[in-house]
Amino acid sequence: MFVVALIYAFLVGVSSLESGIKIMGEDTTERLFSAAGNPIAALCIGILGTILVQSSSASTSIIVGLVATGKLGVDDAVPMAMGANIGTTVTNTLVSLGHIRQSSEFRRAFAAATVHDFFNVLAVAILLPLEVFFGIISSTAEAISERLVGSAGSEWKSPIKAWVKEPVSWLKSFWEAVGTSGNLQGTLMVVSGLVIILLALAFITKNMRSLVADRVERSVNAMLSKGGGAAALVLGLVITIAVQSSSITTSILIPLAGAGVITLRNAYPVTLGANVGTTITALLASLATGAPEALTVALAHTTFNVFGIFLLYVIPLARDWPILAAERLADVAVKRRTTAVAYVAVVFVILPLVGVALLG
Amino acid sequence: MVLSFFKGSSGEGDFAPIVTRAVTMLGDARHSFDLASMVLLTDAEASSVADDVRATDERINQAEQELRSDLVVHVAVQGTADIGSVLGFTLLLKKVERIGDQAKNILELAEQGVSFADSSERERLFAERQELSALFAEAAELLNASDADTDAITEYTNRANVAVAHYQSKIDEFMTSERPGHEVVPLAIYYRFLRRIGANLVGIVRTSVAPLPHVDYLDDGATDTDD
Image 1 (spheres, chains in turn cyan, green):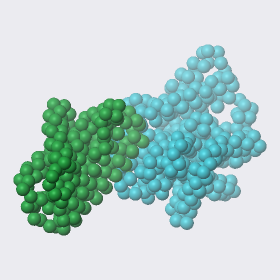
Image 2: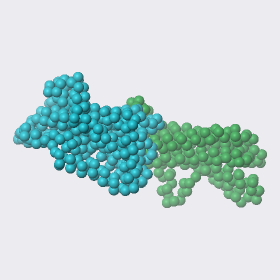
Image 3: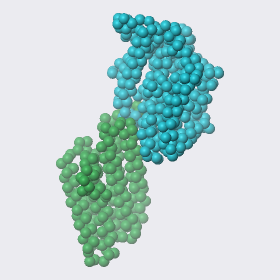
């Protein structure tokens, strides 16, 4: 019941965020989202935002909420969601640095962490241009969204939006009662929404992790005895949906890989499953809005990951690319440990900051 | 694999599956010991049981490796709250695995031509074999018990330690014996294996209830854990 309440709170947070943006003036919102007009800058914003909140579930839910306001377009939001995929991998990369003192352990752990990075980066490298020039992901997501809830620009009667309407209006009335209005009120609604989203997700993750720990342990043991493949991918998906966090799923793999209990090739499909599983939160968040565009963006996030799996896992030729890249980088990082630290700093902080500064 | 996620918990506690398999390993180790020591004490050919003993030893080794992986997964998923139990089980499984090795060593004695079938001490050796074999079964029962019976464990430990002390006294006797070397050396080696098996059985039972104190590194080095 407590988890159900937390999910409800999460949905209230998303709706509050949406309301807050709508209250803000046109000029303010235009300034806020102008940087997202460039797809590379939007990608970098997605990376940085996800690192800031340490959760792709949170950042993509926020993106969905922003799209629902109509101030952020689907085309601008899709690269942000791709950036969220990259940003979330910093967590398990940092976990792998905990093994830095033991060479053989570190090699295995770091490779298991960075294979996730390489998959996401390669997927973005292939799919972002296709999205920018042909809209391959957003059009697929839009087609699915239209079938489910209707076309963009319309409003569908989301039952969840009706359920969360009351607490959001209480929040709005509260900020009005303390004497705020316009942009300030909008900002406070946004901040309240963000705080609620982050707290709710943090507690959901914590509680679900405890609740399903035995099941996760049992299924990981089963996976170790039977190997990887499609079943491992589905397992990664299921565990991530259950604990509402891809970082938890992938972070469990790192010490196992470091200890040599699981091979890189067997850990890889679990990571891919986690990538897809984490998109469920954004899908849930989109239900708290009445905008088909929000659902489109959430579906775009899922579609991006599914397409990425098809290109970089299902196709045998490409399956080894992230694995070989991760192994090569791990070999270098073992010889020179500063490489690992520099890698994290450059890929997750410096490059995205430069991207936003130059192109935003 | 995925379906195992949706199955309900057995409700027996986190380490119940590990205990169950450890008990099975202990049963296998007993089987190996019984076969190997039988060959040494009778006219049976070593080759008649060699494949069985070696296959059993491999099974024990594989189980130990799998359970060690399971313990690593446990720590990765559940955290380090019960790290003491994890360490204890790691040690316990290693001790069972060593017993399997020691049973194989007894077989190797027989394969090298050693036989006590015509020995004047044959009856006593048989009795000691029976006694040690029974200790396996008791250790398995104590390990499998849902609640640790500290009195039963203490009583078992005392009895097993008496047996271990007896084996050591026999080794000491043979080391200073006037009897020909070809008579006493194989006996001394055999008793050394029995002593190690006995000590490992004691360690298994004690580790199952109090992992950290009975890892024995907390007594300022007084206890030698190498068995």
